[in-house]
View (cartoon, rainbow, N blue to C red):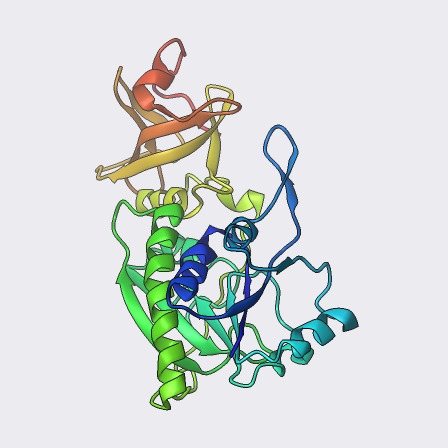
Length: 307
């Protein structure tokens, strides 16, 4: 029986690829509309659209999920499953009720923790030591449906949102195939989520604004969790920069937002507890560079304030 796949960003690519390689009949891919991106303001298709077209799969990009024609098209395909991986919108009941075996969602957290649009980012920002992936039977709520399978994944100290998302997407693709096969064999039944829900709302630009009164470890987590977007940012010597990589350094005392040490190779900034050693930095409109390259030709003074 056919499967309809809903997905949009890079995170969804391994799942679509796994379904294709498993020999599943993907009758249709539904993805978000093309968006204008980059400095050239070019209209850019979503990654899932590109991959689907490369495999000769029909793609549609509806502006609204409540469109009667869309519901009729999906229903006419008589899908066994609708698979949803990072599509970006909540499916209405008119679509949830279409597939004979349900709508299955792959979510990048151990539900009910971090329900919402940015689970990977917030897990890092909040300092979690582990996270994971969950397959669930979708209902009308926000990631609130009963779960099929979960797999825990350690968050490495050097992980950022980009690297962790990539790892979770690969593990999640395997879990998705396992879930589909388990449902078909009748050995896998959904079970209610257990525990108190937490939420991971979409990141906003201002979420990347560094508060130097926080502890160095918290700021380090923010830097990792907001990469590549929106990025953790501040102003150094009057220049707006994104801090791409940093590490917390223990210190007996520190002054929040004050540059405590500058050498040719090192830039240490005080926080609410400890120092933050900046390793990689990106000035506005420039490429990412080492702190050594950044300090060359710039007058950064010890004791000056970072805004």
